[in-house]
Length: 269
Image 1 (cartoon, rainbow, N blue to C red):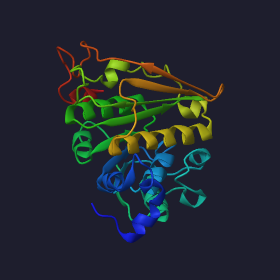
Image 2 (cartoon, one colour):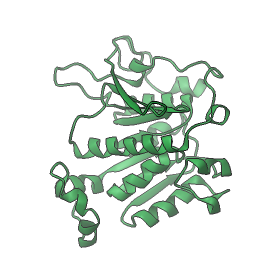
Image 3 (cartoon, rainbow, N blue to C red):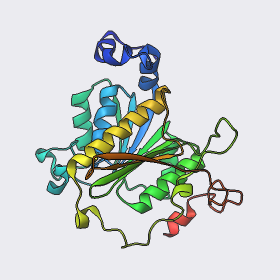
């Protein structure tokens, strides 16, 4: 996909990178990325993907901007309070890069629409703030065959990994699923919400930016990604750690005896 003269100048610092270059920037322009959640993680993620020149960014979020969001959700401003987050996102991303197409989905992602939404994009980046949505997105990506970059926030810590369940490694072994890492969601009420426990605002910026790096890396194809690796950042100690995880033959999605073949279990949840 050819770049205009304006785009060549805009992305000049990418184009001179040996591992990106013109071909890599063209891949970014041709890519379609779905962002789940226009909140703490989705905000910096969307801004950096737009700045990077992702051709089409889809944003799914059914929420409205509230005053308490603004401590960390940098996609929105005070004047956006009460607006749909997807509408606020369109305006913010247009200011960053008019060459990017933004597709909005102001709906709640659920078992009835997840498969169709995800199938319309090349890659999914999940910044949702609920376990139910996180498992729904991961299962849908596995069933549809789409790569997934997924992150989560704690009070002072965050995690990030990439999942390419639909592919195998060079040695022929299957890539792990989300459920290989976390087989089941914790029971409702056992993990306090952001509103209950709080969250360091700048932490969302750190993890959302790391998500953007991973999305860009996955599209262009440089470096070593986070497939089979969980990146953990502890803001209290300013320390990064990485844990490895493998495909579990007992996982219910792609295991030897899979029990999840559609999203009906999420519909009953």
